[in-house]
Amino acid sequence: MTVKLIKPGEDQVTIHQLLDEIKQIPQIRECGAIFAFEGLVRGEEKDLTTHTLHLTTPDYDKTQHELESLVADIKDKHQVKEVAVIHYLGRFQPGDPLFLVAVAGAHRQETRSALNEVIERVKYELEFQKEEETNQGNNIIMSGG
Image (cartoon, rainbow, N blue to C red; front, side, top):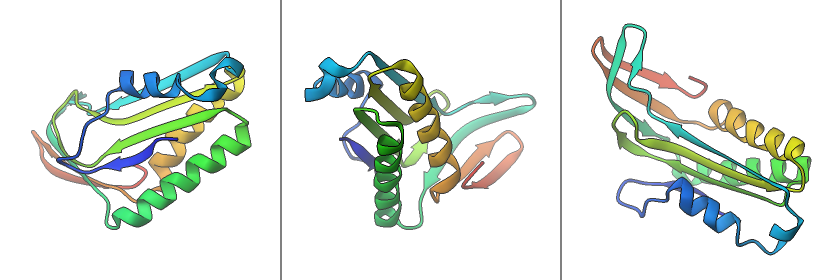
């Protein structure tokens, strides 16, 4: 199971690589669905233009552990075969990927539910800070934003 916060300078993983990896699990023959999500840096929103985004966490080890626990909980709850998550830290431009998730399961219902729960829980339960440099100045967004 790949569940990792990736710091600046570490090897990058694409959504295609994550999907290829999840297709190699021994239980793939029991799977009827794989759902994937790639969260990107949004550059335009109404009257706001984001030039760069800096994403950090105050305690890398704690956040990594919480991410692993969250994924294990969701995998067990939804009885899916595999959940893989990559969350990047560092400085990004609009269009850059920040957050990758792939879930493999026997049926689409529980697989899609597990994917949705990973997305929402990571956003609201893990301690991240986003600093956006925009056309209207800098904006700091804490977890859940």
